[in-house]
Image (cartoon, rainbow, N blue to C red; front, top):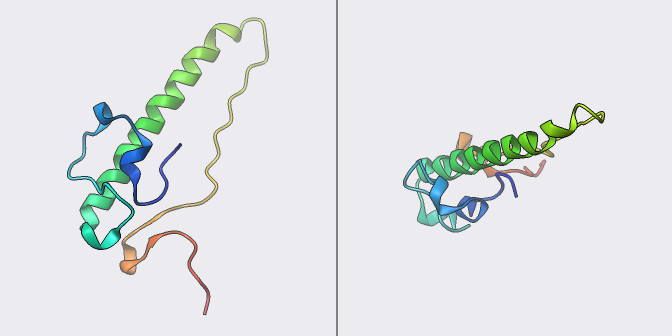
Amino acid sequence: MGSYGLAYSQRYPKAFEEYKPVCMTNERSKYDAQSVINGDDTAIRYTDYFLSTMIDTLKPYEQGYDVVMIYISDHGESLGENDIYLHGLSCI
């Protein structure tokens, strides 16, 4: 599912939770900035693991096929810079 939103803890298995404390819900007011960053870092850590697993799954096929894997981010994520979180800033 990638690293998205404040409920990062729903984006990875508990066994991957290395950076703590972690923001556990999408209620920003209940957590400090470091908890949000920790959740995002952990979700990215799991995404890295997942992508590595996909690459390992594809490797045996590279001898007989033109194999390609594409992973693209659709946007960045604000993690508290200037007290801005998530994405989709409104233009005023």
